[in-house]
Length: 378
Image (cartoon, rainbow, N blue to C red):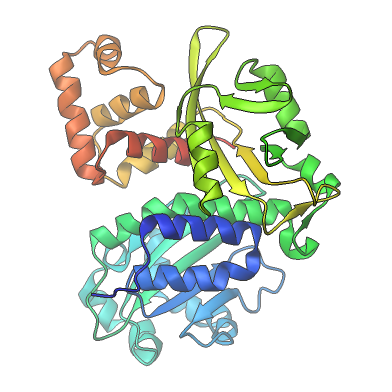
């Protein structure tokens, strides 16, 4: 047993630390490698200026090999070609090698025998970190295991799949804030152009700055954010964790993800997602001496049905189970879903149990949150 293996929660914190300080990405990906018991990492960029070498970051793989891979090996990469043939080259997929190609076929391939075996690589676990949003980085993150190691299992895939939602959002934050170019200074023009609602809070939770998206959110959803004397009091209602609990987490050196609901026009319930982050690494010009917290509230969009189908396919859900999951994502109770689908409450509860078993989550709310993040148009 590896006593230095990071926990899931520690990795999530490290991922968001890296979002605000890109220098930390290499160490964070190394921690992920340890977590997944991988022997090598490759981060491949699909939107890079130098297409001669698409490798953005590699561990235990020669970085200059990207040039040869782009010019020759890519067309022989049996994993890549199988993914393209099966239509699995879109965003949001987390796959093991045996999901792409039969093991015997793989071992007979030119790609394996002429390069992978030489590089001590026999299996891959990859996740595609992008969607249709042009501001989201388009990258593929691959972890490899050596010839003498066990292959990746479904539990490994699920572990990376759970973390991929955070990786995708963190890469997006890094890209949108342009922190690598701005040397950790979030300038006003960049701050105001970001599509997510951003609030800068001082140590007493007073809102000292917010961007244009936040102004639109406040006007479009009155009461979504409870403010008293310019101080943030609460987020909607039924927030988990509460703003007090989130502040306490951040003050202890963690990051806090908050899920909360609202009543829009007193009738339609909507779920919102927020992230509270300490501003100890990044300064917001010209508020360096006051800024203490950064609150990011994601812009909700309609649930993308095509993406929902793809998400449910990852767990082999039936069409009926997908309908039940959609109802849960829309905050409907099991009784309301049963009435809408004209089936018994027992049937709905059975579907929920099957969904939980197939996805491997401990609580169905975990899967609902994952599905909402994966299928909302941001």
